[in-house]
Length: 447
Image 1 (cartoon, rainbow, N blue to C red):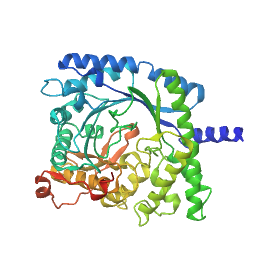
Image 2 (cartoon, rainbow, N blue to C red):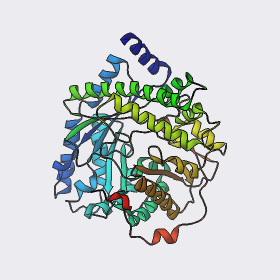
Image 3 (cartoon, rainbow, N blue to C red):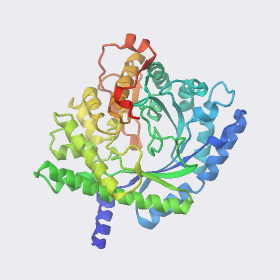
């Protein structure tokens, strides 16, 4: 039995694109706070480079010893708006530059946490950080930024929603590619290992190791074995496959934790697609029985997939967290790209799908002349879905200057390419301009 499991794992890696998408070390910067910004940044650099100095080396050792591909090595830090607020700095670009230097020094791929949490209002550092995002992302290549603008418990900060629409436009005006490093959340989680939304929550330990798995190709291949069978069988097959994949994630995380001397946090069960053929969430949905992703029934099939992945994962690992679901980033999924090009998948259907999966309108290119108010409206819609359904939702859109519907934006690597999708021309300007706070829903009061 054990030999068969080993052979199955080898096949998953060799033939079905199974990998560990990321090992992410979370690092608290709360002990780096200083009223002198320069001193705070030096403390930040020292804390990151000391804590994570062996992260890349250990990941490489695990990959070599066990033959398990580990695609990304990443860092997540305490939201910088909290850390930098004690200083009198006028903007926080220098903090992003410090994060960049630290990430480069230890060789990690990305570093997240140039972030602010404003779901219930602004504190002194939040406005400075948000205003700094366009320049910070323009002057760095590894830094990722996020802002949480709503939650089930707090409602939605409509002032922040309006501001982030403008910030995304400003970021795209410098370079639209920078927008892929910026995500706007509702119900952001503190232990997410995936970028661009990762940050190290204030409730986390000083340092932690979180693992993000992948494996859409593995699930697709498993479902090929139950073609024509009842949907209950499909769910069970996904659950069994998610169990195997999650066990591998826990195995890698436990070894990394031991070797780095850092506590093991969680395995994020998310199915994260890539532009590679055979590594697509959309293809799983089509294997379930849809002629094409976007067809009637897509949301139901995705709900089944998401639920079965979670059930299989929690059986395999006692510490499951992060986002844990099926990602639907358009530019990173080859079959999604084809469906958009053919007109079978639009933003409205994608929005419906986000109600049952992780995590939101993700990696979507939109026309360059899309108004800031329209972008804010998209953010508000996604935040409302997250708030009402008590789940994490997000928006990561890329306004492409000079490009219109049908053109493409090229990102390269895991980020793929994105066809520019049409946006409803009706404007929410007056709604967004009201500002204020959308109250939390009645079911948020559970105490």
